[in-house]
Amino acid sequence: MSEAVSDCKDGAEDRTALTEADVEALVRGICFKTGPPRRLGVELEWLVHEPLRPRLPVRPERLDAAYAALRTLPLSSALTVEPGGQLELSSAPAASLMECVRSVSADLDTVRAALRADGLGLYGCGHEPWNPPVRYLRQPRYDAMEACLDRTGPEGRAMMCSSASVQVCLDAGYEEPGPLGHGRRWWLAHTLGAVLVAAFAHSPVARGRPTGWRSTRQYLWTAMDPGRSGAPPLGPDPRGAWAERVLDAPVMCVRREDGPWDVPEGLTFREWTRSAEGPTRADLEYHLTTLFPPVRPRGHLELRMIDAQPGPDGWIVPLAVTTALFDDPEAAETAYRAVKPLAERADALAAPRNPLWTTAAREGLNDPELREAATVCFAAAAEALPRLGADEAVRAAVAEFTERHVARGRCPADDLLHHHGKEPRP
View 1 (cartoon, helix red, strand yellow):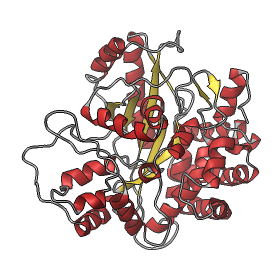
View 2 (cartoon, one colour):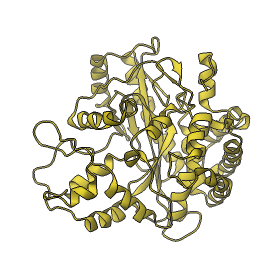
View 3 (tube, helix red, strand yellow):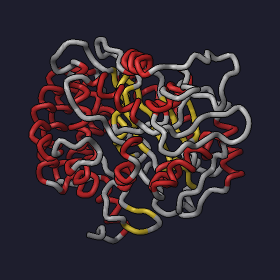
View 4 (cartoon, helix red, strand yellow):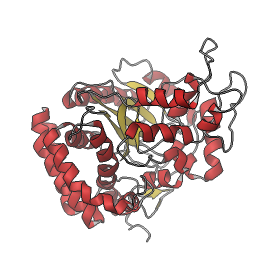
């Protein structure tokens, strides 16, 4: 959710209002930049706890001091803080899987050492399992976001303050058809995405109780306003579909230099372009950061459906598996064939509000068809990793996860539920 955007407008910005046609052209140009898939990245969100007393919320003044120290560290990743105090590391674009793994691992070692000095640690889980959502950041952006999301229920606030993820960022792909073409990669992201939800689900508990979902975090996205968190319909023109979704999405806020930002109700971006004082390009760029679909095109594809993972290096497995299934042509073709039958279960409804994604979030790999697809996809990824230059440690981590979870029809949420001592409510 953290974005490299200003909290207020630049007084020198171009105030030229955009038309609908301008918006469509800009979105097509800036959100899908195609070429050979060569670069990737990862964004890691973490909950911050006291290791010895993880059920107690960390006091804001302790977080202030710890984050001030972290901002002085020499990191290659961008370090940001989420509304509820979650910590995010966003890698620089990497030329290979191992470059990304080594760079982020080094940054995490540095961050963990600094946090230990303050008696704090990082915890990988898709949803805060013990405490209610409490906002840590008090900024105009998050004041407006909270006011907007509260209109449709408590799920938006929980998403802001209690969730954490592993977001894998991949190039959009080639312009032409084929396993690495942008049309195929867009479709695969939204169908294989359900398998990734199921395999890596790790948020079955909230406020100390099982929620009935293996991925409570994914449930939150499903329960929010579909205009903000839903994917566009899948079809032959991803650029056009995304441009339509951007135009028809509700405006979260209108930024102001002084005072609280306006939070309009029922105003779409398309309607804003038709008003007397229409949006500028800066307003469009900001609007794009307020949309949270499971796959967000940002010049590259940002896959947002994977829960934060347990253990210090648990994030490496979804990064490695996802990269292999998209960037290795043979694995990409295998994954496409494995998940194609699952598309029928979506009932032509957009992710994440279709039966396929809902089942993945609720059941994980307990669903036989998701388990079968995951088995094929993880095997294809394992075969592809040597071709992508993955070292022995990465390959071993994927193999261990496959044996412990995928082969047994389990996901990390099942381990957490077993440790919790309860099964989810029906």
